[in-house]
Length: 70
Image (cartoon, rainbow, N blue to C red; front, side, top):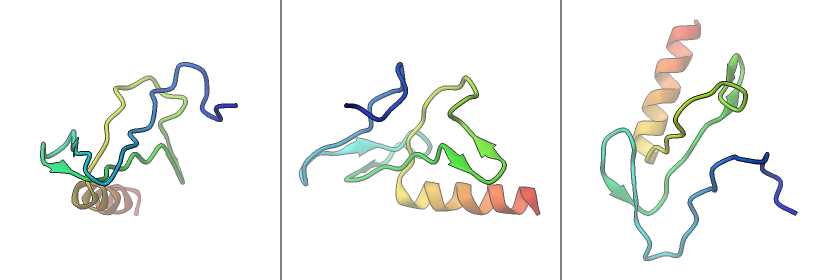
């Protein structure tokens, strides 16, 4: 059984030669991330466009979110 809620976008999954595009910087990378839940951050219940980030953009977004909540 698929653990994702009905209607949730599929996770990008691929082999070692597959490439994905970061929705933030546009670079093609082997892996992307999507943070949907964190303290005071919930993108599972809020309607929005699903976006995936490369490691560098994901880390930058985490730092910005942490600085904004301090």
